[in-house]
Image 1 (cartoon, rainbow, N blue to C red):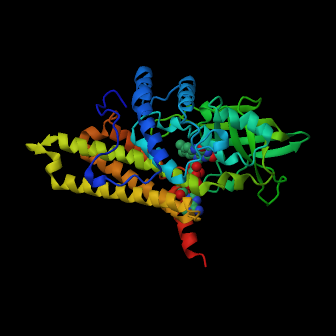
Image 2: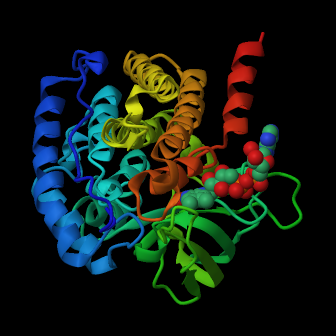
Image 3: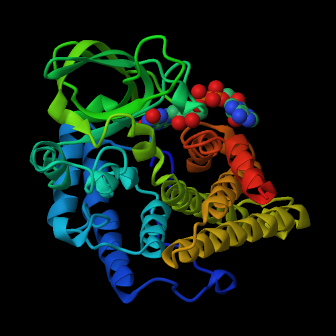
Length: 407
Ligand SMILES: Cc1cc2nc3c(=O)[nH]c(=O)nc-3n(C[C@H](O)[C@H](O)[C@H](O)COP(=O)(O)OP(=O)(O)OC[C@H]3O[C@@H](n4cnc5c(N)ncnc54)[C@H](O)[C@@H]3O)c2cc1C
């Protein structure tokens, strides 16, 4: 947190009103307890020592240190299959663990499981990767020795991801890649990218998108970073490819199957963004309640004004409802249900409600809430972003309506 923010990294929001039985497995409960120690102990110390907060990002070397420690403690690869040293957790357990990580308020929250550039980026590729690709790309990432980003979006291909223009032309034993990816999370500190490019013949009306492992230090690759999101973070960059020669052996799966590969786990991935929103919204709710109890105006705490009480009541109700939908969707996915629309509902509802919670948290803080450095001010900006990221609210509504209206 910012130096001005006196709120320590806190544990979960405690109130009998919000108590629910723990929905996950005993193993998830153990992992959460161990993670709390890591987050509030070692990582909090590291953040203090290096002056890291949500807006002052860690260097690549420091991140590598965090990934390696998380790996050594058995957390980093927990989402991977057992054969790769992972825990092969249910979707529900993953959701609950991520919620606990984000509700800690730690600036290292996205890095404990390597969400931007670690194991969650490769888990779904394991079945498609060749033995050589496993050795060269996947296992080093699983061991926290290398990092990897996922590059699909381009200037003209956002929500319509299939409209990408980056081309991969086969020349002998290589594909030659030319184009520009933008807004790629983790690219400023990644070693490799899983990158989507068109392998369709030039001027073909057909879309044929293929996936490649691309070494970001290869000749012709440039990562352009330095710009910041509205939350003040610089984890995102663009990847420029100028006639980059990528060996045919780095094609992932079959040609033309890239988009399927990229979007294959979209339902689960959409849901797995929800615990970050719910966890961060919990921080906003906690801060608003504490501030309302402590702030005195007109000779009493502002928590005694009914307008403040109603805001807190609405925030709590929104938070409980968003969390319940997230948990129920995870349970549906674990039961093998094709919960595509439910995952979209969850992403839509959690992102919209989490932002509404942050907005009211700012209001309860009054002037303090709109001064940079207060945690709620950061949470407001951070939670605004989730309404756009990983499929905008409009795209989620499209998916829900399509499922509902199909004959
Ligand atoms: C911080 C950050 C990190 C990101 N990380 C990655 C990453 O790691 N890898 C990656 O590949 N991409 C990444 N992205 C890209 C992200 O997925 C896209 O920004 C997002 O999908 C939206 O695309 P767009 O920005 O081009 O918006 P557009 O698609 O241009 O949308 C603009 C507006 O039009 C609306 N709209 C578009 N199509 C429709 C439609 N059919 N119906 C109704 N409304 C519509 C949208 O909802 C939105 O309101 C990241 C983006 C950001 C900002």
